[in-house]
Length: 425
Ligand code: BJ8
Image (tube, rainbow, N blue to C red; front, side):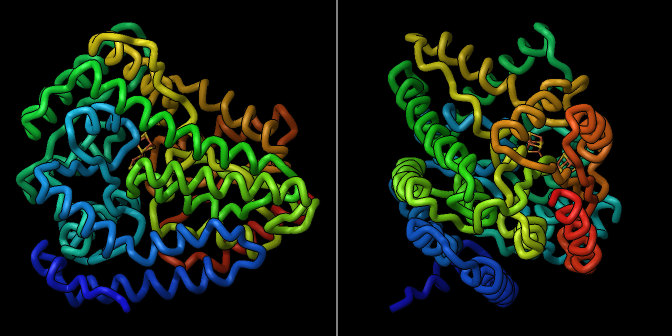
């Protein structure tokens, strides 16, 4: 029997008609794109369940947490440190930004030439269809790219709980100090919100919880090095997306369980696709739920995606936070060290990212790289040119795509991806 969550959505102030329409589209897309795949690992059943309840049971859990006095914090970026949030007795969730909604109204507030991700986050707010955003006690905006930073000025007038965090755009000792100062300020703001002071014990335990979650998803990524790939890129992308929503301990356990199954599949040489299927690494802008467009196009065109150099992927999860500190101060330094390594394209120069893409292509035996740039995203589109150059130097073919969340260009994109796959063969 399915639970009726309508009263809860009503209480959160969602637009019920719009929300129903969104869930219908999401459900159909999920059935068409995910459930039609062949040779899926059984463990994906967990993620199918999570997706079927992403606005239902998970929101109910968050509402129960709130009723028990816990606070919910929403974020749009991997620079918001989950360790600090958990240590102050709050829960961090990623906010919806992966689908077009209420675009006409969005374009009255933001220029048309704004990337889909930013427009989507506004669409979910204007359309009142994101229960994560509506249940959040604090929304964190981070000053990363110019688009986001200016958009937060507008968002600040639309919500009463926006906290803006400044971020450096270069990597020097001074800017690392700036990041530390921002994280200290953020810690104080979260403590103020929850009324719970971060202690060395709570911070250590939070570091361990988040590290375990990252280690599990990293284990899953590493298993994609096998040929045949034991899991499709679509399924692995979904696990990376759910990373931002799920209860951390349950997520870790579920991912480790699926990894056990993938290890057996590797031993038995069972793949999601046959051996010798062309292998592709995707690099670039983050792909938030339900942005499955490029993976769907690529994998139905006859290749398998074996890795994501993305914030919804290895860029966001690869580094762990050192857990050797004993004081809050030492652990805050470890957190700063960890996040300072994230090589988002808002940094200049950003040669670390070029190195990392080359390393990933080699480690995952990718024959080619598709650089995924969202239209109007200056940082990633600009950086795609040096990325392509760095890959050319290693004789790795690179296809640069520039797209949005719409499906108008799907046919054209598919033709380009098919031609690229032919080139790899
Ligand atoms: S750390 S990648 S999650 S900022 S696509 S909004 S960059 S114009 S999302 Fe990101 Fe944090 Fe960086 Fe990662 Fe701007 Fe580009 Fe839009 Fe983007």
